[in-house]
Image (cartoon, rainbow, N blue to C red; front, side):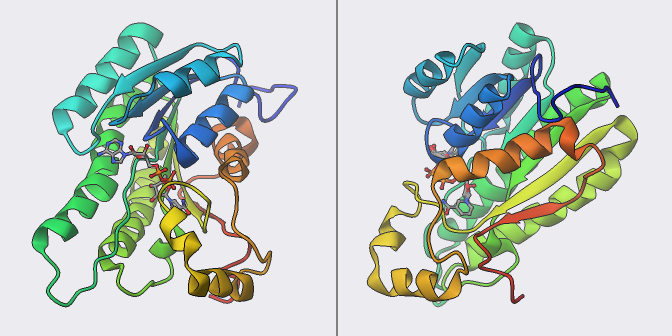
Length: 255
Ligand SMILES: NC(=O)c1ccc[n+]([C@@H]2O[C@H](COP(=O)([O-])OP(=O)(O)OC[C@H]3O[C@@H](n4cnc5c(N)ncnc54)[C@H](O)[C@@H]3O)[C@@H](O)[C@H]2O)c1
C-alpha cells in the first residue's frame, strides 16, 4: 500500500459516478472531488450544471449522457473515459430508480424496469469497468444499495430485491476480483432527502415512522453520504472489501 500523509487523499485518482447529475450521485461526486479526484459525471439527464459546479473545485470534470440499462452505452462510456483519462480508479454504481410495486396484479414491465436499471445496470457497469480494472491490476468499485436490501419494505418488492441482489453482487465480485487488486464495496443509505424521496417525505405517516424508528430522529442530507464514498474510495479502507456499509442514522440497529 502506498503511504500518503492523508489517508483520505484522492489526488491523481479518476472517479466515475453514474446517475450523478443530482441527488446522492452528485453529492458523492463533490465529496470525491473535494478529496482531490478528477470526476466523470454520467446520467440520462443533462450533466452540464453538475459539471460546472464541480469544476469550481479545481479538478478535471467530464460529463456524459449514459443510460446504464443499455449495454452499448455502458461500454461506450468506459471507452470515452479511458480515451480522456487513460484509467479509472474509482467507479460508483449509483444510478437507480424507485417506485412502488405492490405484488397484486404487478405488471411485468414495472418489475423489469427497476431490475433493469438498478441491478442489471450495476452489473453491466461493473462488468465493463472490471475489464479495464483487471488490465490495470487496480480499482475500486462502490455499489449503492439501500437499507431496503437488508430490511423489507411492503409494496416495494422490485426495489428491495434489486438492492439485496446488489449487495450479493458486491460480495461476489469482491471475492472474484481481489486477485487483481480490485476492491468492491456497497453503501446502504437510509432515508436521504433527494428527488427520489421527496414524495415519501411529505407523507405525515412516514415522517412519524422516521421520528420514532431512526435513533438519530431525522432524515439525512445528500452531503452526509459523501464521507462514506470517500472512505471506501481511499487508502483509509485498504483492507475493506465485500462490505455493505450502512449509513442510516441507526434505523437498522435492531436487525
Ligand atoms: N435517497 C435515498 O434516501 C436513498 C436511499 C437508499 C438508496 N438510494 C439509492 O441511491 C441512488 C441515488 O438515488 P437518489 O436518492 O440520489 O435519487 P435521484 O432520483 O435524485 O437520483 C438518481 C439519478 O439516477 C439517474 N438515473 C435514473 N435512471 C437512470 C438510467 N437508466 N441511467 C442513468 N442514470 C439514471 C437519474 O436521472 C438521477 O439523476 C439510487 O441507487 C437509490 O436507489 C437512495
